Image (cartoon, rainbow, N blue to C red; front, top):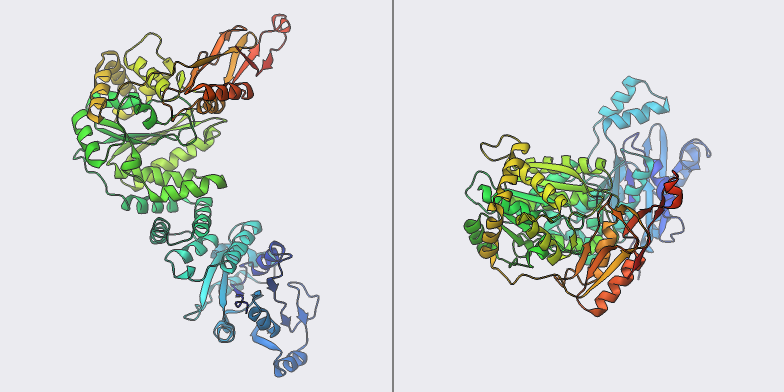
Length: 618
C-alpha cells in the first residue's frame, strides 16, 4: 500500500500573493503525476477574474454541501468556498495535493486529512499594503484596517511552514516550490532531527538566527542528516546569507572551537582569499612581525586546487603538522608560527561542506567569511589583515566584489570582537617567480636574504601587508610608518633571523630544493608579455607533481610588460618524474599560459600589434 501523500493547505493574508505562487508551482510541477492542484468551488460565476474555479450560485453550493461533496467549506468576503472530497482519495493514494485555503478551517481539515502541512505565505506589511493598493479596490483606511486584523496561529499539532514572498514572483515561486518539494521528499524521521525545520524555513526565505544555525551545524557535524539531506541544507544555506546570518554563523562556529588565550593585548594574523599563484607573502610577513615584537600564531591551509598552499611551502623547510601544545610552545619561543590548521582549528563542518559544495560549484564566499573569521578567533587573534585578490581567474572577478567582501570581513570581525582590515589587491598575474612549494620558498628566502635578484613584486606586497599589521603596534601611527619599520627589519637581516627562529621552533627539516628534472618552454615569437594566466600556470605546476612533490612546479622566467625574443626561455618546468614532466609539457602546450603581443612588420610601421597566445617548446 502506497504511503499517504501530503495535503498542502496554502494560507496567507491579502496581498501575500498566494495565487501567484500556486500558479508558478503549477508550472514548476507540470507533468508530475504525484502532484495535484485543487480547484475550488466558489459562489461566483465561472470565468470571473482571479483563480480558475468552479462557479456556482448559493443554492447549488448548498446542495453540494448537503450531498457531502465537499471535504471542507468556509465563508470569506461574502462568498462561499469549498474543496472537493475527491482530494482526500488522492492523498490516500499517495499523491500530494496543493490547495488554496483559509486559516479558519485548519483545525477541521486536520481532523480529516492524515498528513496536513500548512504553507503560510506572507510578506512584510509595507509589501502587503502596496500590493493591495495596486488592485485599486480599497481606500488607504480600509487597507490599514485589513492589515491590522489579528491573524490566529495554526492550531497546536499542525505543521506550519512559512514562505516569505517579499521579492520578485520568480523568487517567491522558487521558495514556495522548494519547500513543497523538500516536504514531498522528506525522509521518515527527518523532522525529528534538530535543525530540519530550520532548513525548511530557510528554503521559505526566512532569515535564520544564531540558535537555528547552532542546530544546523550540530546536525551536520554530528552526522544526523543523511548525505543528500546535508547537501540540500548546505545548498540552501550557502545560496543566500545576509549580513546578520553570516555573523550568526560565525559566532556559532567560533563557539565550536576552543579559543587560545595568548595573554597579549595584540595578537595578529593574516589571511588571503587566494587564487593567485606564488604570492607566498605569509612566509615573509610572519617573521617581519615577529622581529618587531608582535605575536603572530599563523595557521594555514594546504593546497586544495592550487599548486601550493602556505603550509605546503613552509613544509619544504619545517614541520607544519603541530598540535595545539606544540604550536603554543613554538609561538612563545619564536614570536610566530606558520603551521597547518588541520590539527588545530580544523572543522568537521568544513569537511562536509567542501566535499559536497565544490561539485555543486556554489558561490561560497560569504559562507567562507564566517568560517575564516571563526578560525582566526579560535586561534586567539585580536587583529587581522585580509588580502582579497581580484582578477579574471581568481575567486573575486572584479574590484567591486573584492570591496564588498572586504566590508563583510571587517563587519564579521567586529561582531566577534576583533579588529580587521581587509584590502582589495590586483590578482591578475602571479606574484613572485616560483609556483610550487620549494620554488615559492626559494623566492621567500631570496627576499629575506635581500638578494639582488629577489622578486620585487613579492617583496613589495609583503612589506605592504606587514606595514598594515605593524600600524596596530603602540608607537606606529600609520601603515606607511609600519611599512618603513618592516623594510628596516628586512634590510637589517632581523626578519631572516626571525624566520630561522620560527623554523627551528617548529622543527627544521632538510631544505627541499627545486626538482632537477626540468623542461624549458620558449617564446614562439618576439614581443612583449601582455598577460600571464595564473590558473594555466597553476595547472602546469600541478601536472608536474606539485604540491605532493615539494620540488615540482613552474618557474616564470618573464614578467608582464617584459620584452622577449623568439626562442627565449619563458617557463621552466620542474617535475617529480619523467611521466609528470611529460604531462606538464602537454599541459603547457594546451594551456594559453603566457600571451605575447608580437612585434610584427606592421607594428614597426605603426599598425596595431597582433596578439599571440602561442608558445613553442624546446
